[in-house]
Image 1: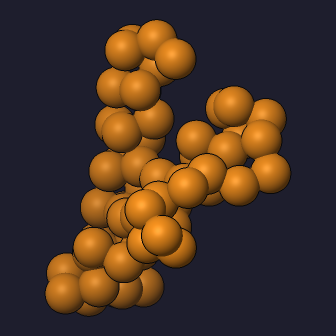
Image 2 (image 1 turned 180 degrees about the vertical axis):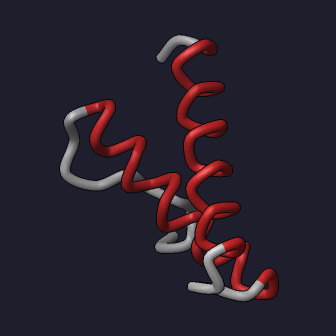
Length: 58
């Protein structure tokens, strides 16, 4: 995958999480878990795959 696409996925994930924090939907302490979930969802959408491995399942 292109580095540019990875950067865009990372940027979009960060912006979504920041918006959730600003809207009070999550607390900053929940950033880590929610970020991984959002990042994987965006990456799955971009790649058109069923599931992205996070390393957590290993």
